[in-house]
Image 1 (cartoon, rainbow, N blue to C red):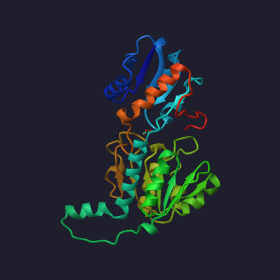
Image 2 (image 1 turned 30 degrees about the horizontal axis):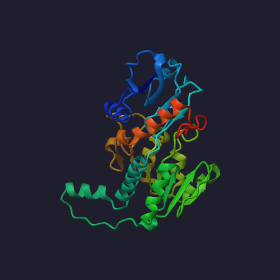
Image 3 (image 1 turned 90 degrees about the vertical axis):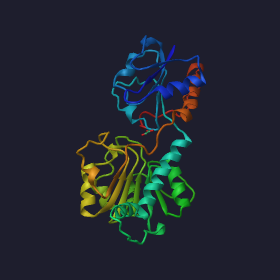
Image 4 (image 1 turned 180 degrees about the vertical axis):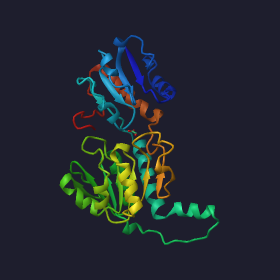
Length: 309
Ligand code: GLV
């Protein structure tokens, strides 16, 4: 029986190294060198070719290589009976929170402007935007959103959160459900999107949403490119409704060379690095789930496929 890694656009050597270091007896195969398809019991994947998993009739677990599982659940041929798991790892929350805090501080302390001044040898002090005036609105209060909310709140930013189901986080005003969305948006001077991508959240960062934020708001998207209607963001930045944005994820990745985001001085672009999966840190929970699968125990970090996260 075997363990398959299916991640066509990723380097997998480090995964093989860290997984085998924990259990050298596991027969680890890397797609497309699958061998006999009937051997495959466990698949670790990122952006697999749709329809791939229905080839493995002995498959007992599909494990996402990251925190998100949208790349799995969008497969129309996903075998319904096979459980899906995701990564839940403190180092990922830490890395995501660092990015969000950096995005917020970079904006409030106007570092982009100072970098541009520096390139022109210009000495130009500016009054920083005060934390107390910068109410942060975090959409999505799962492991990542909660950690970010706590860290920003510790820096004395007023923090508000919004999620599908009610959450309770010390020092954070939490709103839940569609009915509370408008009031949440009206308070969010800096909006951070950390939502899972589901049919409900696709396109949630759109013209209407931007116009419900206070004028001159700032948007940070670290979730998925498909949450954002890119042309609506450009229009909102052009009109001044948004003061700018910091974006780590895009509709098409890598971001095409001729995309207007690249050259917009109000938009920061980073290449989907806000929270990377570290094979060394994550391999133990994958191997743990492999052993659980083998011994028929409940899997950790199982995803509700219907809900999409
Ligand atoms: C990254 O985007 C992840 O889902 O882990």
